[in-house]
Image 1: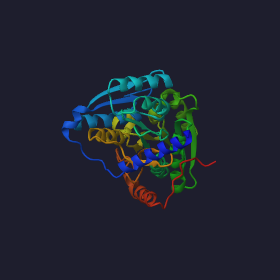
Image 2 (image 1 turned 90 degrees about the horizontal axis):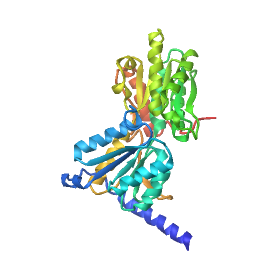
Image 3 (image 1 turned 30 degrees about the vertical axis):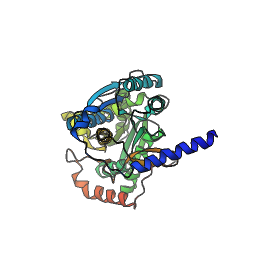
Image 4 (image 1 turned 90 degrees about the vertical axis):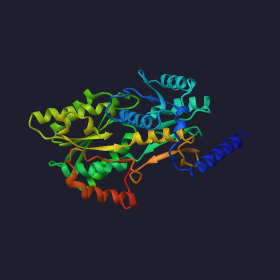
Length: 357
């Protein structure tokens, strides 16, 4: 009986998600905004990382400006599941809905709290494992944007030696790695890509350790690498620092930022070395969830019909990922990048999401 009930519940969840899929995003009436209180739960680092968390914050700010919603932002400091659960529960108890969790580490806690508050809407970025009608998953095709970054890196490199540094060696960041390496190799077969990670799980300090990132990048520079792509949240600052110091010593090292257009928040010295950024529109995802809440709806695409998981995938075709042209350094490569973009969207290029062995 329990198995049948579970199966029935899943079917109902999927049917409900499918029904919502027929409804698009619609601008909300202004009077509805007064009913919406948005909760944002950042992970360690919070605002000010000039990357992932700040991109989420930008989406919140855009929604506040457009709809006038109230909001509360919280940041974990210890980084434990119990702390994340407590933070989410406090927001739910205070009547915030939707509550948006920034990062896959919230998956377990959000599943717990969503069950406790079935009438509260939740959203989670970078995870699609929570099967609940009141949880919206926002995921991205990072490998596609990283492929384009790889094209730019291969064209800009003079040595043919390129580096990738991820924050933590987990499947999510290996998507960045896989796409980037594929883009480099497709553009310049003779090029090599040195892959490193700041930390290994279960140690997640690699997302907020710029000092260690700097040491890793300096080691790469010593080996002749002249383009380094970092996908590591707050740790990415160490990449930019290493390149700036190398420039002062007469070495030209290009850096590639991630998540947001990091050229826009870089120092004058860092901007001289920032080739591009792989943009991941977390801001758009956060804005979409809030806009739907104001309109009295939830995000509506089915991600996994069998599991009853719904939300939205932001890929290259949807403008969810890409590369930035700030600084003008990759303008001369635009034709090649545009060609790769079209080939990926059409399906001619299948970008891997798992590193080759």
